Image (cartoon, rainbow, N blue to C red; front, side, top):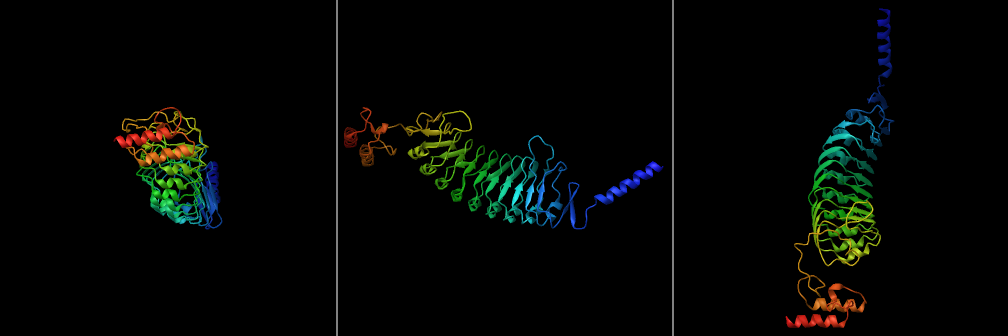
Length: 354
């Protein structure tokens, strides 16, 4: 009986000493000051759902619950709606957890955020349009989730972004023209989605890009001429899409890119497995890889602007090639390995005879 009483007293004392003070909240069996807590990190005690008491930490600036690979101290469930009340947050890292459900629209209230990492969870639904309110963001990673719907047009408001990853989701729709507003982007990954429609010409505004990965989507139409503006690019993945038409010669401006016809070494660039038509720019003609050319028009020598007919514009193009001492296989009508006045005369004859 003495032993049982002792245990009861011990438990009562333990409960008294583990209770949080009136100016504290309990989060995962620990007490945190409501006013003085500015950072909350994942720890060995982190488990289960994110409690709504987190939202009482009025001065919280850092919420870092990322789980290192192999650990089991992860959180699950949905992201509390009250997350939008933490208006002092600058850093939100929820990577490698088991969170699911929609991203609350009121995340757009967190206008002081500079960093969001949602990588490798089970978030679903659309990326809310309110994401465009977070104009101080420099890093946004939504990769390895189940997000669907289109990329919101409001993404173009995030002009401070330097890195944007939407890798491996179920994002559809077309790329918004507003993507061209993100002038500070150095890394853009859209890999492994269902994005369709053309690559907007505004992509050429992203002149600070080092890596552009849009492989394994459903992009269609021609590669825009403006792609040649991205002279800092070191990696470009456009493989496994439905791109068609001719590859613009401006792609040869990308002198930092190392092309490969196939394979996935992580460093090379690819345009393989599309519907791109020959003739290909000289800088890439041997590395375009497999293409479905069944819908490509028959190539006609001398048709330098690919409009299907020989006309005065083609003569002008040939003259410019001659004056600049360049070579173009389509302009070499007599196939003597050089472009000369004879080739221009041949085009004139063809036009005259037609």
